[in-house]
Amino acid sequence: ANNNLTVNAGIRWEPFLPGWEAHGQTAHFDQAAFDKGIRSTVFKNAPVGLQFPPLRGSNEERSGDGRTNKYHNNSWVRFAPRLGLAFDPGGDGLMTIRAGGGVFFDYPHLWTYSAQGNNAPFGNLLQIFRPSLDDPYTSLGLPNPFPLYPNPDSQFADFGSYNSYRTNHQGPYVYQWNLSIQRQIGTDWLASGSYLGNSVKHLLGDTEHNPAIYIPGDSSTANIQQRRKLILQNPVEGRKYGYIQDVEDGGTSNYHGMLLSIQRRRARGLTVQGNYTWSHCIGDEGDSQPGIGTSAIYPGRRWWTRGNCDGDRRHVVNMSTVYETPQFANRAAQVLGGGWRISGIVRLQSGPYFSVLSGTDTTFTNSQGSTRANQVLANPYAANKSIDQWLDRAAFAVPAPGEFGNGANSIQGPGRIQVDMGLTRTFRVRENHSVEFRAEAFNLPNHLNPSNPGAAFFTLNSQTFGKTITAEDPRIIQFALKYVF
Image (cartoon, rainbow, N blue to C red; front, top):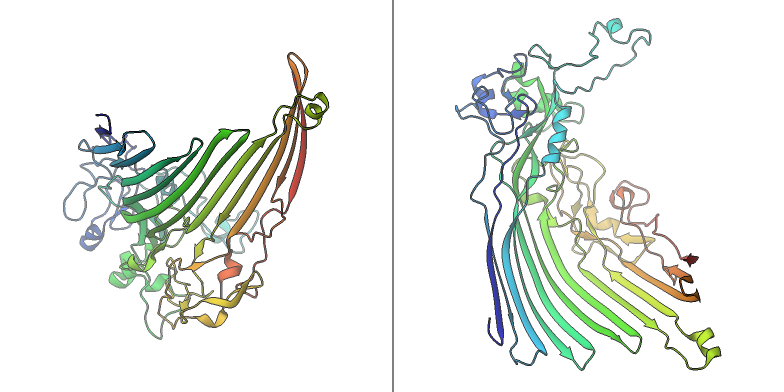
């Protein structure tokens, strides 16, 4: 550091040492093992290709190419360098230029492994139609599955659904960088402009490992199981598998944003803070909660799911003020007007992004996004956008049989305007006793803020397509009186 420049640099070491998992409590489908007819040594009745390695591997459960299956290895080389600097170009403390960047690691979201509890033989979903209520199992010639104790002789039903986690998962990490300029204006004001960016790698996502294959003229939602890849490859062993969710770590996202802000420190009873953010987040759809749900991305279509992030809000404006009335020398004026604190918060933000759905599975695969509609016009919005008609129905069409729709999170919903006000004052009763009065108004102008669009809003075959039928809270006013002693 010198009179004008300060530099900070460092390297953080974050080794990843995953804990041990009890042997046989996790499942992994191995395509090579399925091709070679390799069966599990932990559960002898398990379908061919289904392996049960512990968290960090076992010599007993090997993949089809002879490698030991491992979900995670100890990772010792996880160094996260960071660099930051601050520069005062004038040397007078009135202007500062700051910049920084670094690498930040995160741990894999291991809570998603809870979905393994749904895999056979640890958990089973059994549907029985028209059983005898006195004895629902033996009346249909089935053994009573309760209590369920997994053991080497556990049975596996046909067309079972599985959550499979790839071996040697990589931990997610993010590159972050920023540049900002701050300038003092007068004695009380501070203005700043900042650029913020990041790039995230190895987000957990999911694809289908056993997708249904579209067969022209012979595909329907009723024969999805019979058209799955594994049963077409091997009719005998493949019928043991239904939906297989393949959790992998290939997801990415990036964010770029401009942040402009202005502040007025408290002077003569007035404080002002305001900021405006213009940003854009792009990511892979479905890379936030893998291991949950019943449909994943169709193989080879990751690019098709990339679009605006679910939480992307392109424009956000915040403004807050606090004003405290002064102390008056006149006793009557002080009693009536002194010590009041008036506050206000204004928030404006653009709407969220979503995908328009056709309402029917035109791909006959039940995969993620298989009901997405086709946008056929450049402008998808109504001529006069309103809560009664936000989207133009003619801008969308149902895809042809066997085709996926387009436009992942490409349509923007209604924005939001929120104005809140508060009025408070503390009345001193005696030295250690006081009464605080508070009046608050939320959504003071009673502005109609549509709720985030639901399925009825963006599904083509819905009677309320493009119409807002729910809204956030109306104006709410509340009063409070608190006695402090």
